[in-house]
Amino acid sequence: MEQPDLVLLDIILPGAIDGYQVAQRLREFSDMPIIMLTAKVRETDMLRGFDVGAMITLPSLQLQGIAGAHPGGPQTLQENIIQAALRRSSVATCASISPVAR
Image 1: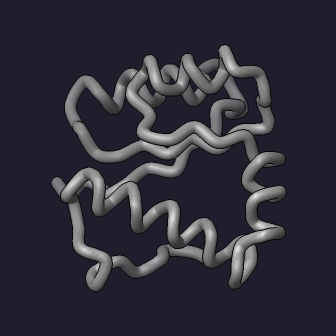
Image 2: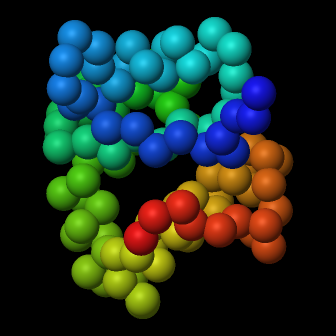
């Protein structure tokens, strides 16, 4: 069974399970990079993301603020973050990355 190279995960999910629990379950069988994007902005929320195995935990408002100053805008910034996470995890090379959705 194929596994994704990377997971983009929101902390706030509909239903009984949240992004922290999803990340914990993923860590039971995989070391793929997890990037958590969230509307939560407290430092404790971000630290909890790291505790459950996320490589990066970014509040979406912070990402939007950074994207405004980033050459190329938010899409380029997101792609750069994903590429950096993949490079760091040695899962894929930058040349083989193709965005799933835009």
